[in-house]
Picture 1 (spheres, rainbow, N blue to C red):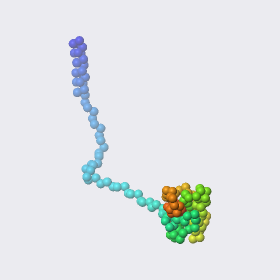
Picture 2 (picture 1 turned 135 degrees about the vertical axis):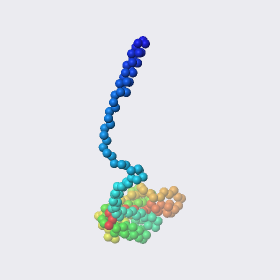
Picture 3 (picture 1 turned 60 degrees about the vertical axis):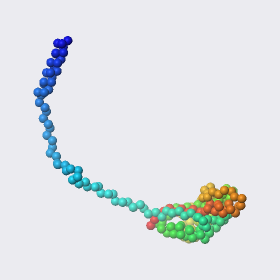
Picture 4 (picture 1 turned 60 degrees about the horizontal axis):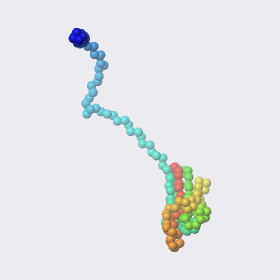
Length: 185
C-alpha cells in the first residue's frame, strides 16, 4: 500500500513539474484602440426629436337641453330657450365644420304614460328639433332622429302625492340631445 501511495505521489509530482516548465502561450496582438475619455468628458449627441404631428381639427359637439330648454309636459314644441340653444350650439357649430359626417337628434320623454305613448312623443320631439335645424339651413338628409322613449331618464323622482310635483321633478327627462361629428375647417 505504501508503494502504491508512493507511485501515485511520484506521478502527481512529475505531472506538476511538467506543467510548471511548459511555456505559456503568447498573447494574441490586439488592434490599436482609441483612448476613451472619462464619462464626465464624453459628449452625447441626442437623437433629433420627432416633429409633432398635429391632430386633425374636429367640429364634434353635443348639446343637451336643460332647465327651461326642455319640452313642456306632454308637448313636443320647442321652447324659445331651446331654439336659442340650437342656434348657438348646433347651427353655430355646423358652420365650423368642413363637412358633416353625422348629426344625430335623440328625443326623450319622462316616465309618466305608457311605453308606446312616450316612444311616439320622444320621436316627435326629435323630429321637431330636426325640422328647426333644417329651417335654419342644415341638410335634411344628414340628420338622423331617434326616439328614446322613457328608457334613458336623466333624473329619478319618487312617486309624489301631487301629480304636479312629479311632473315638475321629471322635467329634465323631457329633453333632446343633438350630437355633431365632422372634420373642422
